[in-house]
Structure formats: structure tokens, C-alpha cells
Length: 248
Image (cartoon, rainbow, N blue to C red; front, side):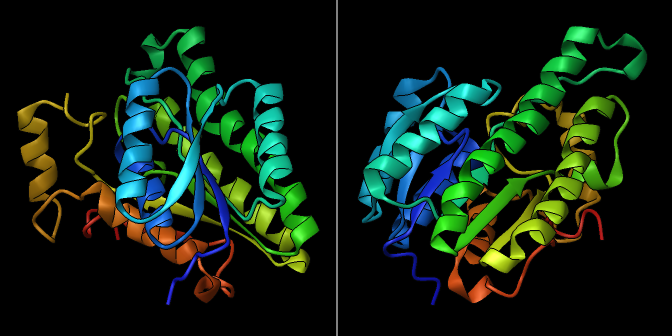
């Protein structure tokens, strides 16, 4: 079950956190995984090492998700080398927290360009080889904040909610070619990104989480493996929440 041998995948923002866990989990199931990163090469190399330790393999794929041409060139290059692109995980993202009235135009643009445009650039580039092979899995990593909203995170919530509409539209556009599109919506996951959250806020979130613990990157990765698998072939246009009951 969930055998990904022979599948070719790309995971953006895979140098750390949730992206790394997804890359390692996909590789552990047999997929060849292209590890995308923008700047953190050493961290991306550590992801590749972890993938190989899990019994898988892959390659490093440096590009900035906000650069449309770079994304397209990278996916076309992967297809030229491996003759297929089966799985694309749009995980790269930024969180710039501020009250809406205090957010600058640059902060808004950075958030939306990275989180929304970056995911759409990846989907647009990857769907062509998926259609050609009549098999594909597009997975966007959203957030519980995109579902429930949160003070001080209007731009972030907007960007993550946008991924739901995007995935559902992609699901309808390419279902006839056996390409699915789904969304992962993690809750509070212990990563570098959440490490700076003040202790008082962490305690408040933990109290509001029925399962009584924070999530691990591996919790999200397990859901990604499922959505990437043959077994999830009848699942498309859906949002799979991994939040411990924080938002139900």
C-alpha cells in the first residue's frame, strides 16, 4: 500500500520542516524526489541525505518559486532527465505576521507572490507532463489559518485560503487526464517557522487542541504520501486537515 516506486516527485521548500518531512516520506516509499530550495543549500543537502537514509533517492533542484521562468525551466529539466513528473507538492511559503493596517505593500506582495503565485507556477509547469503521462498528483500545503483566520495574519490567511480554490479548479480542469489536486491544511506543527511563537501563545494553542499535542512534520508527510498514492486516485479537490482537532 502507498507504493510510489517509479514515481517522480518535486517538493518545493524541501530544505527543512514540513517540506523536508514530505520529501523524505515520498522517497521512503520509492519516489525519486527533486528537493527544491532557494538559498539553503546545506539544509537541502541534509534533506537529500535523509531521503537516501530512508532508502530513496533524488536530486537537488534550486530555484525561486516566485520566478515563473525558473520554475518552468526546472520542471522541464526534470522531465527531460527522468521522462516523467508525477507528483508536485507546493510547500514553499512565507509568513509575515502583522495587522492589516500595518502591512506594507511589499509585505503583501511577498506573501501573495510566494504562497500563491509560487504554487500556481509549479502547478502550471507540472501539469503538462502529468497530462502527457495521464497520471498526476498536485498537492498544495495550506494552513489551518487559511480556514479559520487569525488576527495579525490576514495576508497569510488570504494566501493559504487561495490555495483551496486553486486546487479545486485544477482538480476539475484535469480530472479527465487522471490528474488529482488536493490540499493539506496543517495546524500548529513544530518546525523552525513556529519556533519563534511566544510561549504564552503556544500554551493557548495547545489548550485549544483536543489531541493535546502539537503536530510533527511527519504527521503532515504521512498525509502527503496518501494523497500522492494510487490509493488516493478517487480523491480530488479536497482539503485534508492535520490539526489535532484545533479546527473542525
